Length: 290
Image (tube, rainbow, N blue to C red):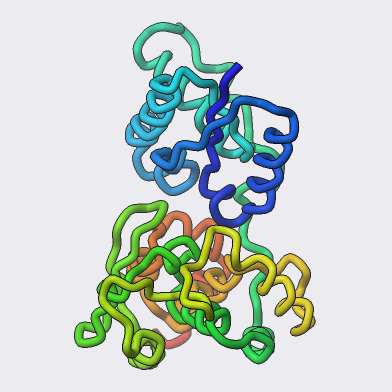
């Protein structure tokens, strides 16, 4: 049997260790496995909630890519697996190939999958983290904090994507291409990082000048987290949570935060609702009523 590995967003970012372990185990077992870089996000969460038909299209494309290779798909993420399976079944139901969709509509994700973010770093914790990083990794952490961008988005960005005059940064990730609007401080930091670099060079590079790889952040992040005495579950993605929560608490409109960080208002309400509610109360306290 031939298989095609589907990493999903988790395998490429938040659970890279599971992805690496799966590849190693399958290789050890001598299985015929290939990797296809053309796969797209399964659409769980943002796409599913905003446009279910587009989610069907995304997964139809993923299935078609595997079918073209004449391989079965191996999925490591339970959310991706459920989403892709439901997409296929929903399509069959929509096309009239099955008469009832009750069986899979009743299937729910595993407990706490997609639950509200529980780990939010404090300002003091973030400062400690920065104090325990150095060199290129320090820059990578700092830019992650200042932009809220995903690791994979930052390591693939080029110097030409940064416009210091407009104060913007063009990124490409799981939700497509977007323009990130930067604070003056962030522009200053990126100017320092990109000084003397050619436009085609990577925006963020390692100390030896080589580009960051998909899993290169894990070891330095783990060491910095330990040295800074942060919660063990702190990962690079935690910087994104910190950025979003701070932006919302500062009163930045949810739509602007969503567009800047490549997500949706619905996802912000789902994962950061407690901050948005406090902002709304603060706004109401400022309204003078008779």
